Amino acid sequence: MTLEKTLLMIPGPVNVSPRVLRAMAKPVINHRSPEFGKRTLEINEMLKKVFKTNNDIIILTSSGTGGVEAALANTIKAGDKVLVCVNGAFGERARNIAEVYNADIIDVNADWGKAISSKDVKEKLTQDTKAVVMVYNETSTGVQNPIGEVGEIVKQTNTLFIVDAISGLGGHYVGVDEFGIDICVVGSQKCLAAPPGLAFVSISSKAWKVIELNKPRSLYFDLVRAKSFLQKDPPQTPFTPAVSTFYGLHEALKIVEEEGLENWIKRHEIIAKATREGIKAMGLELFADEKVASNTVTPIKYPAGINDKEFRKTMRTKYLVEVAGGQKQLSGKIFRIGHLGTVTSSDIISTLSAVEMAMNDFGIKIEPGVGLSAAQRVFRG
Ligand SMILES: *Cc1c(COP(=O)(O)O)cnc(C)c1O
Image (cartoon, rainbow, N blue to C red; front, side, top):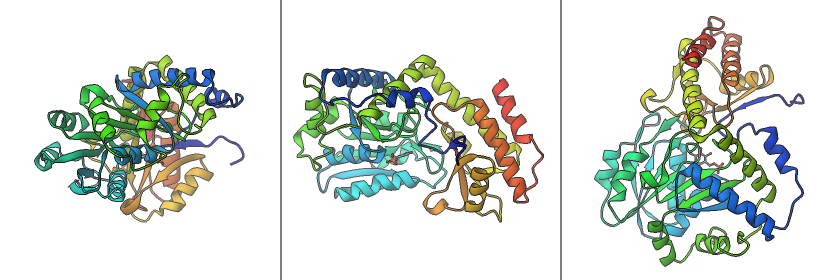
């Protein structure tokens, strides 16, 4: 679309502030210079505040999946017992990574659209469980898993708690140290509204003890090596980082600080509620269990007879709002509204309005504005 006005309402990557884009237009500098090292340390300190942790944070030039792979490649030996929670596409992906590293996988499942039960985790946890792997915010289904409860259980054991919080941290309260998360993975392109390309991995001292005894099973994702480079003077990364994206991230984190993390999260919470109320008022059905609904993505069931590709094409080309489809077994059955990062109430009003109009184009009769007024009532409080 040549207008460059399309609203990007998918669960990552998200709309990026022009401030962030301008920060990225600065000249590329030597990634081993004191200047870049200083910037890296600043980013690291800012990330620690967002993660609510005193643990080390390693910044990887990779998408979020690379962060999850780094977590497993550094902690899991072939044959290690790993409990993997699966209730959606990203849980499946974590499981696939555990398979690649030849873990002895113990499954904890829940229906897609429902949360994992911490009781099930507790029941399957044994003394020789090396790690519990859980996706916090399952982006494919719009469900939050109970990381606080599971953290409380795993904390008491020698098992590591590895969390994919890629689309959750920043949109929900996540206290990495408080919850006892040993390795927490976040991606740049989700709630923190930076461009895609970076993954952040926080590592507790309990996890370092395991990692340091292991032979790393990845050269690029060797976390011990990454830590030793971070401790150099000036601080560095083992390999060339995405320098411009670091600049963008720095500016994006400044924007989070200016709003304040608490307000940033609260905004996600209100917008998610407004989205759900708007959708329900239209007579459409939410996919996820509302008790555990995500603050960052809302999946919606298609009424019978609507073609997913056609619907989303109408949304994109006629109303300039880009929403996401369903993944895996949900493909064609749902569409997903991503509302994370710098998303505003007017973004949601525009999106809901586009949904009403597009549904009308496909013969679904919705009273004009009914979703908008429901959403506005939430915003008014
Ligand atoms: C987006 C996302 C990922 C990672 O995606 P990448 O494309 O590798 O950045 C992983 N897990 C969850 C829960 C996500 O939302």
